[in-house]
Length: 233
Length: 217
Image (cartoon, rainbow over all chains, first blue to last red; front, side):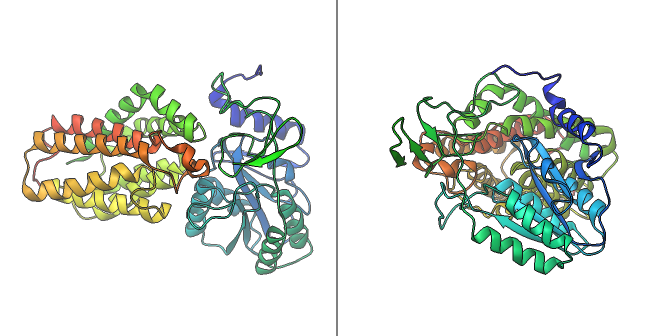
């Protein structure tokens, strides 16, 4: 895949700088550590905060705004963000009513947010997003991953804007999560910016319902042939 | 063991990781999500860059500082795991100016325990713990028996290699590879590989440093 990249090591910072420059009325970019916040400081309210790996950019930072997220912490490409980013972002957007972390159920994201929550002195709560139905729930392992988080950001963000307290926002977020199912499809896996190859390969006549980064390899991922005959493996 | 030994050992780990780039990358691309090598390398670079800041500190504080730095630079699952490892070693060594072999073996066990707690993982789940747990147990036993330095290093390396290779026959129940189910069979776990590479580097480095493994507690 051909792409324009100045310097692979600077990809995270440079892509965010570009986005912040294009939307300077909406977004404020912080570089050390890296996080993005809402430009207009909101009224006193709960601050929904989402951290996710970069890799689907500008997805997560694109959901910052009124009635949405107050902050996002992008990690390196396909890597979860770190606790210092989350702490700095939470401190920046907290208006004294607490911070709600919206976290997708990936081992790395969960652990980093746990450590941030342990270090936080301010009140905080977490909504764990695990709605991805191509991965079966299991008794061992991490269980279902997070697929869509945007609807949680929308609903929780709207609740926070309307004056819901931290606990109410968490209840709303958990409720949306329990009632949501998602599944993504891809023909091929995403390329990793610093390498020529893709993370996995798949015949282009088949759909794969795994995440874009590793499409076609994940257990429980459904596959669809050319004629729409789904199978699970 | 003093802070100079720790820094020398971590520089050796950095070199070892770089020398094994291709193998770590290909293992991680097979059953991980392809970010392991670059994340670990980023962590190594951050530690190498803070050498001057670490040198005047006692080992306990140096380990804590290293842990916090790794926590904020590695990211992914490895960041909290490796970060917790060093932070717990630092906490365990508080009040010890220059840990001897026995003291260091106990601190290492505390660090490995921190990885288990943070990752909620156990032996046999196809993770870095499959190398770290047996190596840590063996170190405790060998220092108890009073093994000489060469025997100690040789046996630790043997244990690390054997257990790293053994992850090939495991099905992952933790970590990124668990989404693959039995398709991860036949692949060495990349976390176990980097742990083995790191242990080899630490052993080779400390074996030749007189202050590193002498009883000066």
